[in-house]
Length: 370
Image (cartoon, rainbow, N blue to C red; front, side, top):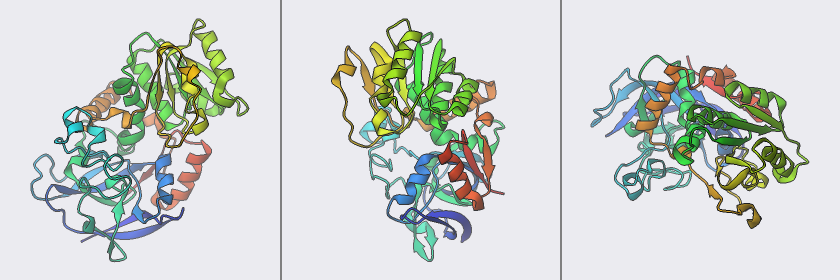
């Protein structure tokens, strides 16, 4: 039995730093010693999921123990954890849509609950009772018991803190551009919202060869970050600009009067769900990256004419294919990961890390474990 300090979300908006006990990994399972765990708004949202969970869904670490039937990993391997574990057998996996696996996905298969992609539930105990792990992995913990399919081996020398943010925020932003929108080189793009995901959308646009990348935010400090990560133009919006219609007028002025080729919504604000449609040209592509899950009203005039609106999950991630690509881009110097991390925190400062994230002070905060 391994004892592990972790953050337990209580389901009522609160969390506590607690201790869990991890049992022996079973068939196709491993225990990973977590070295770093990235934070995003979903982790804060998980505080209100109505049940206790081991928090965290971004992370990197070292394989500590290996269960039976695991031949792809060995003790001591460095790994990035992936929350969308594919089964490789269902219809969607066979279609190449591993991120929306019909059997294992904690989003599409089982909501935010237990799915077959989860390591055996009794393997992690809190106060002597089984506890679920956020998105099947629970990375805000010194140790995590996970399916071997949740691990992607790291090649090369990447700092653990930098590696830890790949598995959600970086992948979602970059993948929404490259995998989902399939951006063409020499095109123009607008990015609405320059938080962690928005900055990685900007990186995806830059790496894809976009000739013009327009970042929009109400926070000037975040727009400065956007320029650092590849934005060629910025627009500081105001809260009074409902639907960002005035900002859309400025976008058209910057794009020969017709609008951008692509627009990416990264604000998670329901009132801005339709805003990317106002930013693009006829036959352009609007992408709703932030995962708005509320009813919104859309003026159908915004679709005129031949505009495409897509709502991808996790940037179409195929972990065994995309994570190595991202690591190679990092090693080449094209993908900025180290610069993405504004600050690191010990687990005991999780509340401070959440406060910094919610106030917009961080591009990305990371919890690090000794």
